[in-house]
Image (cartoon, rainbow, N blue to C red; front, side, top):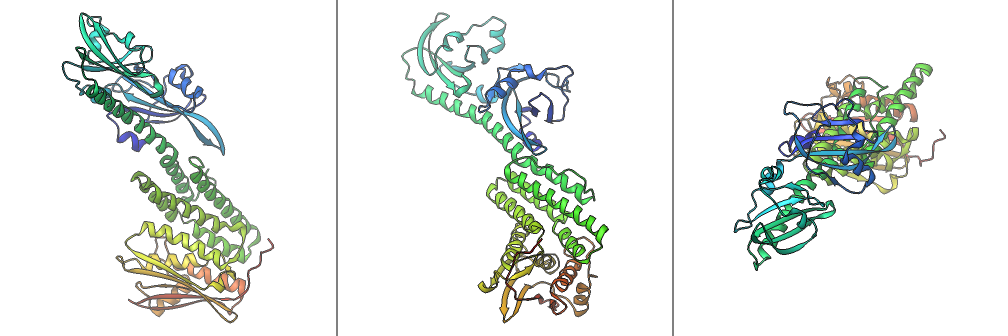
Length: 495
């Protein structure tokens, strides 16, 4: 909501999300409700909850909901609509309020000319004047207007004599609000085509100014703001607070992503407890691997990419990124399984590469060469992603559009091989040895050799000392990491 407000300060005074009990949930710019002010009696609040399917408009009024700011209390037209929010996993009703600055109507209506001394004004369904070019004179009683008669018509034109002046009046009703745009021009027997056309154009502009702002607010509330809230939760995890609440509001996709993060948090906490109580080597290895998957840098950087895509109207790309991230976490959890199919492991690393390719569009491309006869063989879970991560953050670090990562899988008799190849910086023999020993750490927590060592140790723990990793690398040429596993048909683990 902050982004939307900052881009519409001239038209928008306040944006607020309010619970059905009348309590503020979020207010932009930050402000407090006045003491003893009963929101439940406000027209815009009551209408929004009574007719949840509509956007509701109020007549111009002085907004006194918030404590008086530097600009005092100002005249506004309020728009409100019922929305659904997620609180503690349950869905609740709330009201989204937008206060449009009343003077903003001037920029839309005051510049319209109907010719021959003509003008337009705006009334509600009862005939009360909302805007008029001579509003102050009418309010003081020095000028009169035939607004009550105009209110009896919905659309069309009439000829009348008012204040000893013959004139033609054209009326256009503004949707379900009941408001009416009234065009007045001196004289009768006038061709109305031009007047009706201009009035219709004003009608369209009027709707666009108000409705688009409201729709943008709703999109901001439903998509961008929930992602930012989820980012805050991830930041707390990065700081080591595994008891932090994970935000799970917003649209279905964001709720699903939040639940995936929460499930992973619980999984990590459970594995930590297992290490404390059991000191079991395989569980510790699984914990190290899972912890690498929820690298906070990767997670909140990806959320930043999603926010950028939405704010730049790249909704399709944002949907693809959110979907890939949710699938990435779902496959990482895998219901506690340590052994999966080669197909599942390939799908997992595809989602990871899709996300990273979004982030580093000009750095590298990737391709797969997977033999059909290996897809249903057994693979260790979370095996390829650490190797690909290492290739991206070290092999591709200084590439500029010509980087390439290849993932390959094939079978030779009773042996299964998978490989990750990059055409990046390459390594010396000494550096290769350090990577396999887990001593190659860049210090930034990204793509360190610790992940490679973990994969090698886990393979040996599950399949024996005859299996593991082999690294072939040459400086300035590139690196290939080959995974060697037994070719066994996948069977469900008994967990």
